[in-house]
Structure formats: C-alpha cells, structure tokens
Image 1: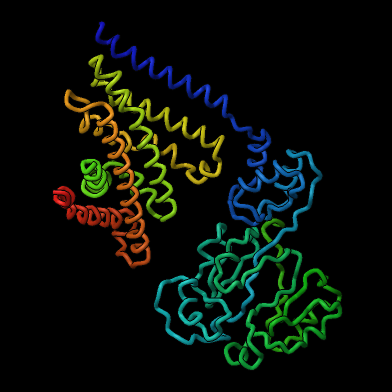
Image 2: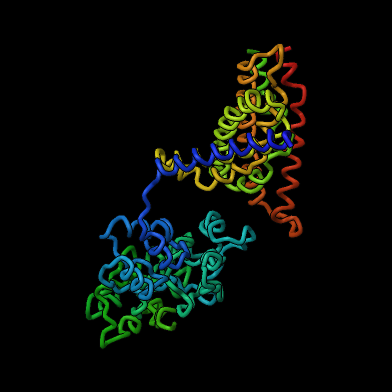
Length: 275
Length: 205
C-alpha cells in the first residue's frame, strides 16, 4: 500500500502543480478575443478563397470585428445572404453585394488558332508557360491545360476545344481561377454585364491576325460604334469600361461591329441568381 | 569541452533522432512537404527539447531518484512536457504573438512528439548523476545533447523537404505515388546517415 501511495502522491502533486501554474498563467496572460468573432466567422462560407482581399475567412472576420469601417459586402461567394447575416451580427446597415462571375478573355479554341509545338511536358499551364510562352501560337491566350479547372472549388470550369470555359451558372465568383491563370486571362465581372471582350492579345493587329482568327486586332470599330464611349483600345486590345457600359438600347452594336468576333454577348447571371 | 563537442556532433549526425533512432517520424513525414513549415516545426522542436530537458533532468535526480521512483519517469515526464508546452504557448500568445502565429499549430503538436520524450529519457539514462559526475556536468551534457538532437531534427527535416520537393516534380509510378515513395525516400535518406558512424569519435582521437 505504501509503495502505491509513494508513487501516486508525487505524480498527483506534480499534476496539481502543473494545473495550478497553467490556470494562473492563462488567467494572467489571457488575450482578449472579440466575442463577436466566432459569430461573424460562422456567417462566412469558410472557403478561404480570398475574394474579399483578406487572408481567408478568419482574416476577413477579424478585420470586420476590429474595424467597423470594413464593409460587410466583400464576400462575393456568400453574396447577399452572407452580407445580410453579417450586418445583423455586427449591427450595421445591410450593404448589397455586387455578385461577380469569372470570365475568360480568350476565344482562341482549336478552330481559330493553332499549336506551334507538340507539348509533352507536365500537364500544367504554369509549366507550359515557361516553355517559350506555351504551346499555342498565341502567347497571350488560354493554354488549355486546366490550371483554373484544378483550383475551381465548384467544378464550374471545363476545358472545351482547347480553351477554358466557365459555366457561369455554377460560378460563385471566388476568383481562385483568376489567380491560377499564368496568362491572367480570367477576370471577375459583375453578373449583370453582358458584353465580354474575349481576347487578350496585346500584339499589333497584323501579328494577332497571323496567330488567331478570333483575336482583337485593335481596329477601333467597336470604339466608334459604342454610343456611350464605354470601349477603349488599350495595348492593342479592346477593353470594356463596365462603369460606362449600360447594356444600352443599341445593345450589341459593339459585337456586330467587331470584325473578328472577339466581342461576345453573353448572359453572365451566376449561381447567386439560381439558388 | 571536447566531450561536449563530440556529444553535440554525434547527436546531430550519428544518433540522429529521426534517421537513426526513428523517433519523431510523424512530424518528419507530416510536416516535411514545404521547407518553411519544416523549419518552423524544427525550430519549435529544438526550443521544446531544450526546455523539456531543463525541466525533467532536475526532476529525475532531485525528486524521483532519491525517492526510488525512477520507474515513474515516463508518466511524470509526459505530464511535465505537456504542461510546459501549454505554458510556452500561453506565454507566446500573450507576449510574442507574431512568433506564436508562425509556430501556429506545431507547438501543440510537439506535446505528443515522441522525439521530445525520447530525448529527455535518453538524457537521464546516458548522462546520469553518479558518484563520479556532478549534477551540473550531467546537466550540461544533457542540454548539449538536446540541442544536438534538435539540430539533427532540423537537418533531417530540411534535407527531406528538399528530397520531397524533388519527388513532387517527378513522374512517379501510380502505385508508388504519395506515401509509398515518401517512405522509400525516407529509408534511403536514413541509410545515407549510416555513413557517419564512427566518424565523429575518430575526429578527436
């Protein structure tokens, strides 16, 4: 009996001492945590996509708790529902979320452009890009090896006829694909917009023409056609200024005027409108 | 002094905890994918190993041995190490939040790292206080051994994260993908450390 006691008592004493020290330490050195933080964090979807501009959902939740000027409508995948919950928890006014979807600025599929080499390396756009700018003859265009497809958390992207296509019905606008594309071809566009320039070739018109029959040659016909002055040619490629573009009554004049067909009219309503 | 250098070098190279003693394999395989997290984990391990030795060595020779309780070392050491790591975490969170953030999840993971328990137990076994050695000499040897073991852990982690990034870039047969090829690579890395056997002792002979 005494052997058991002489063994048990020191262990118990050490345990109690450790516990006491830890209790005292955690009381003395307690770090105050905002009690709203777990609630705010729970509202967010937890995809850690970074569309809000903060380091993951935790970062965004922390920023909102610490700084009341941080807007609650930055979570694009969460859309209005999340913004509403956040404004309730934080007690601020509801702010509408501009829902966005990803758009690929390239239409150079297998029918309109050619490969210049037979690429047999690693199946990744980033790797292919290192080899003389990719396998396609257009070094600005979609590499078609699906880096965007791999990162998409909602399976909204597929590689079709050699280029990436985004199923906007599935896209929540998190922007992970835009970060993954080595050619920076994917951008986020508000889902009410209907005009997309599907080319990113910054070469002069003649050079573009040689590599892709759908490429923007910078002819400025669309610039003249647009009644609102919403289209500009920057670095030999047409760019739509979505602040000016209002999907006007003459809707589609820009697309009709385009000689190569790189201005596309689409319906970008994303998953937010269908859920 | 030469003795201490021999202890340090042999702890790093010959008796490397991961590659020769096969302790701490879990973080070795789990956290060695990226170089920065591998170094972060290793630095935390070095810190905890030193701290754990500093705490457990006196406990062994001032509390357990005089009361003939040497057989309790495993349970007491685990208790003390776990409490110690918790204490360190609380302290870091309060005073050095940046370090706490960068060590992040690794600190609590180390609580149950067998390399840390292994180092403390082997220390009291290999460098005990006897009639001929004083407490402080044994303590110094133990601390140097802990430092060397931690550095050896760092070396193994850094080396292996290099090996793993090389594996990632290669086309591995399907049946070997993932853990199998990692284990094979770990075995070969550990074989390479056998080459150090006998080198350190003869260095100072």
